[in-house]
Image (cartoon, rainbow, N blue to C red; front, side):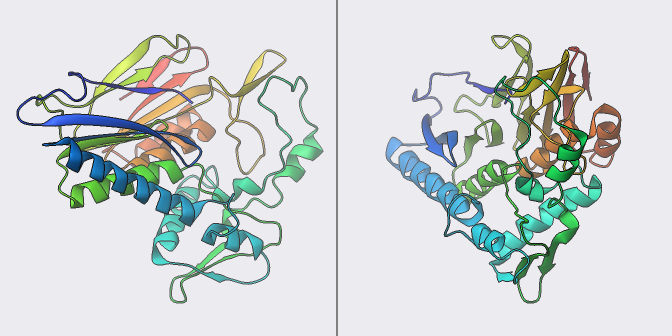
Length: 318
């Protein structure tokens, strides 16, 4: 994953304008989260950080497909058997995922987790899987077979062996929900950095805007661009660390759900806009769609900015 680096204009914890800033790293949803809040005293800030952690943990217990006792696991266990009644929040998040599936004609698909693991991105794969195995690997992947009954509040996977998972947008969604809770609590400013899916609001204690540095995927120690944030989010999808190289061609770990083939052409896509979940849906989709179709998709989201870095290092941005 491409790193998004928070650039502070002050040392965390210093007083300025009667406010302080505290950051806490924590492991949640199997990844590193960094929660940074601004307030008048360390006690209230740390209490709010604790509440943000609890909210992110709540989201994980709602959407994880790895734990046996979550609603998503129950949906997957009953694929092809029966619909499962879930709460309105999971219905809404699934509808958001299906929205992107329809927008991209299947380039984004939360049922991709049912795909056979024929690709490896640890350097061990040297030859292409067979055409037959690639085609077979996505037999259970089809967003059109995710059926939602809003009246009965149920989700049903039409075929046995199907699965859904929210790895593509789950962390961004958790960041947004934690941000929403903090704002309800009266926290005037902060950053929820969910393993590179970043939601921000307010300003730093010295009045400066939050600044996010986008890492250069070819030069990890360099920052490609600095983005000043204004109550919005920045999300990057990328493949510079996880990819396979076969016959001199780079294949991303981000797989096209319809074809079973890894995406090619782009090494990273960064989206800046109001909502981290929407931004994450866009960045993941564009990695699959490629530059031209990605640009067509972005034309439908004029309030969102983008920065695409191609495999050859060329940059396309608005």
